[in-house]
Image (tube, rainbow, N blue to C red; front, side):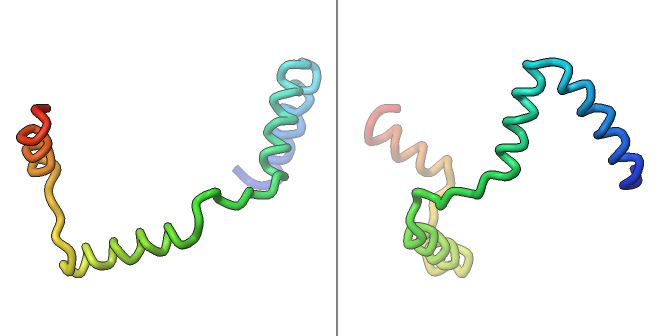
Length: 81
């Protein structure tokens, strides 16, 4: 859909939205979400760095990993799962 067509369609659709109070509130929430600045993650950057380092070790075969089946067997043997 071309920009002009999309613009016309949105103007028409917005007209329908603003006639219905419940849809108007939803539309306001959408605009708030679009205009709202992203909040900084509560997860510290150091955690992302650690995950990236461990992933690199795994991908370069520096670090040994277990398949899910192996982990499941160990858990079953140790805890009876």
